[in-house]
Each structure stands twice: as C-alpha cells, then as structure tokens.
Amino acid sequence: MQDEQQASETRTDWAEDRTNWAEDRTLQANERTFAGWMRTGLGSVGVAIGLQAVFGKFEPTWAAKSVASIFIVIALVLFWSARRNACATFGRLSDHSAEPLGRSHFTTIASLMALGAIGTGCVLWAL
Image (cartoon, rainbow, N blue to C red; front, side):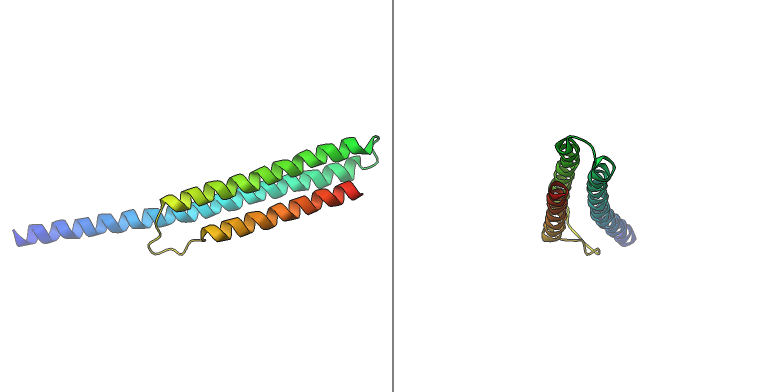
C-alpha cells in the first residue's frame, strides 16, 4: 500500500515536471516567434529602401515614395502586432526553469524597431 502511494506521488511529480518544462518551451517559442515577426518587419523596411533605390529616379517621385511608405507602415503594424501577441502569450503562461523576456523587453524592442522604421521613412521622403 505504501509503495503504491509512493509510486503514485512519483508519477504525479514527473507529470508536473513535464508540464512545467512544456510551459517553459512554449515561453521560449513565443520569444522565437516574436523575433521572427521582427525579422519580417525588417524585411518590409528593406523592401521600402529597395523600392526607393530602384525607383528613385521615377517620375513622379512621390509615387515611389508612397509605395515605399506603404511597406514602412506594414513594418510598423508587424512590430506592434508581434508585441501585442507576445505580451498576451507571456501573460497566459508561467515560467519555471526558463528566464523569459518580460513584457517590457517586448515593448522596448518593438518601440525601437518602430522608431527605426519611422526614421527610415523620413529619410526616404527627404531624398
């Protein structure tokens, strides 16, 4: 009887450990997903720069700049959507052994990326 109870407690402990590890892996996956969306946003900024470089001599110049600006706006939407989703996922999970980024880190990174994208848009319009 004692052995059965002890075996049952051991199985319960193992199950809790596996659940905790899965939650830690999900937190880390959330960070990787956030980074992926940041890369996608940077790709959109790269397209904007490329459009300006390729069509810079295009007349009227405002047309090329407007299309490049659309990609800057797409990047901004991606940055803030990634931040919102990462924070929402972070709020639903608990960390156990992993040390995940906090909400403030997601906000800081997204803010800096957005600021860089806006700066790039301003430079493109100034050319």
